[in-house]
Image (spheres, helix red, strand yellow):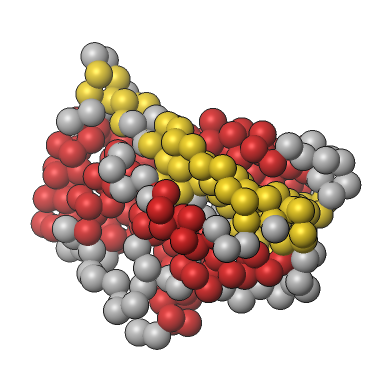
Length: 264
């Protein structure tokens, strides 16, 4: 499988479930990203890996002129529908973070909520981000830390998923500060901090019900399994989730880097 085929598969995977239901669990992260930019009315804003519009909608409500780009056509259609329902003018389009159609220096503000970190060629995506950011422009990117709950979740999932093609970057590498500085530090003055966006739910079974239905990677994996394998995976998934039980709730810590920068 070459990278173009991989991206097409990823687009189908991420769009296979109602991601807007997952997005509600990232509201605090989205607030932090928009606050990290400090929106100015009328400025050109790009949201990369926009999903169903959690960050883009916030930026538009603050008065920015927002473009949202995502690899998954189904997520873009949902984002368009949600923007129309909210009365927001946002330009949503299907696109590739490694090959953006925009001219150099188009955007004053660029965000990505754990989105562009999944681009297979990380330096290519980082260079495209820098290319379309205007001098003095601001960026705010969130990236899951590998030593947090999401890192544990990815490790658990890898036990059931086929290996990625050779040369594909690990998205968790973005969550290591040294790596983030290597990728972006040549083009941006960076300010990086660690935050937490905990996932809270009633039970491991509730987490399974949500993730197996609404989170594209888990849903796609489940649908690829036979009945016996699916039952075994469900049991292991619930057991994995229950290790984060805190009293009457599951509380999974999801630490991430908030990577803020100013274009040199």
